[in-house]
Length: 405
Image 1 (cartoon, rainbow, N blue to C red):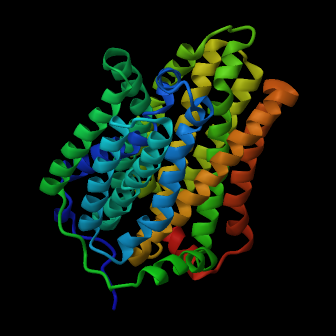
Image 2: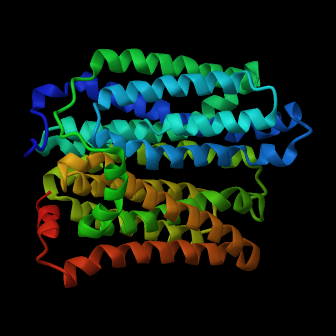
């Protein structure tokens, strides 16, 4: 059965896009709430200092589990029901976190929160499914801007609320946002497009088949993994760099740099519109070039102003390429967008984990100069991945489709 590539424009109203952007951001913010709370949580659970230190990892474990085991279901089930089911699960997990009597209980609750928060990656391909082809990039860019602002503002809101009312109030706030998301999405989301039923086992097995069959998906996933590695290398060592000479700044200053990252989030819709008008390849190349140039700024101009400029360039470059890559992959197999999104995001996060780990080790061995070389190497890797198939592997059906996307 042949399915339509997208819904007609009337199916996705501007207010629906706004609600999806808000919901994606509010959902993903849940996995960042705990990061500013670690010192307070150490005081609440003094008997478990090592487990408290691992609490941010619990969120990431849960998010990875949800990404791999739940997000692919969007290709075989009614996506609206799946979204509301995950929101209900997220509400229960947030309630458990707010009432947690021990660090171990909180760890388990945070794993569950991560699983529920992966609903954000149900919303993004749903927006791509409902958008008309000529507006897909701009629509995905708008939803992604909401998601990226959620990553940014989740930490800020968590720290502020914990300072006023304690850490349990943070998860109570998340519960309120979850209820607001459910209500707004119930009013705003149109019915999903029809899709053939697929078994759960077939959906999971097909992830590897999609990776093997779709050359543009492999190229986009690996290139974005390199960019996310460069991105994570910066943020993993920022606090260490600011604490060292000549800055001598504390963690509060490092947190304020997160606000500078709003430039990248707010530029996401612009990148999507550029991909719609000019094609994604030019936007991807510009994004990779900006990412590499940002690391030159970090390395060659070690001043606070240069770091601000570098953060803007880094966030802008990474997000431009991300939106353009998504416009490519969502055009490949409309009936498999959730699974394609799973492959893409999982590969991207693997690159980010590698960047964080490698940057920490290089900081200890070679200082920030070694970290800067790592960031440049990641950007160079992304450019090579992006250009290699175009030069040497032309002619494939999927590459031709990506060129037209």
